[in-house]
Length: 263
Length: 70
Image (cartoon, rainbow over all chains, first blue to last red; front, top):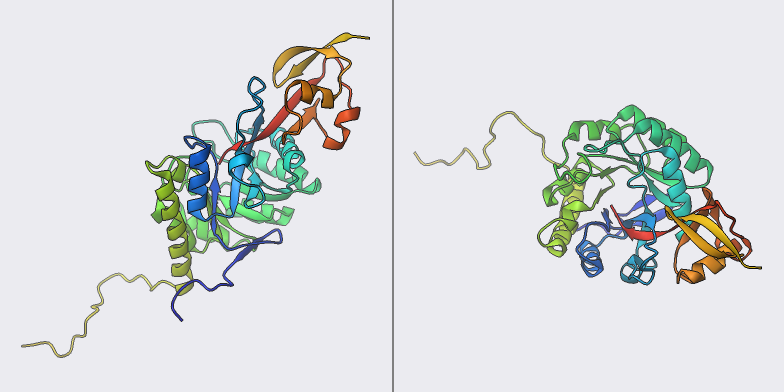
């Protein structure tokens, strides 16, 4: 009883068990060395990766796999940049061919500047991917009906935004996040919007199974230090959730006894 | 017999010496053995079929790999 996280405090998605409740992206870093150092410091076991055309004029350029070992980290290919269901499905079929993974992150995005989840496109892509044998972790709007429907379709994790991708605004919708969470039984993550460590802690305090972020680490002045901060914040948030917060009250309740006061 | 095959490769028109398979193309590009995936006319070309998949003029090819992303 020392208050630490129990060893058995793990979460499971699509039959794979993880101890870290932090999933990190691998984009926007200065270089691949910094990417590797930040991911190491974050303690993450799952990393998201993008699928892009090979630069044919420089085929020997260093590759992500040389720095972030796919045997050590679970690669979670994403569909970032896809604005149609068809593009997302093609992208993930290529990802599966490149790496053999069927656990994927689906995101079908609306236009800039919000890149808000395009839910009709997301439903269409999710259906095609599930039919094709993929295990789909899905980025979605903070819409409880959509969450329920995505779970019923067979998505293995529901991942609403806390704020627009890359905005760093923090979790703007905690009440809706909680309401959505009550609708689903599969793992539930906040994906997008986290700006700093306290935001990540809030996601876990609310009861999310994990949190997914990229820019908050990569765009920090010192990404490796922020990665460590995120690791600690996620642990702190999880502990606070397990501990159970005190009730909020509208008014004061003194912490010191009212008896024995000098007169 | 040498022929020229004109394909769309990662969005750019390329004239290649044929006949050529996907295997041959990857080795011409210096991508042999790299962890890439290939799509031809919006259909995946499985790794096991690189050597027997012949390219034809007008084919549209995508060769992709993993990069950093969120």
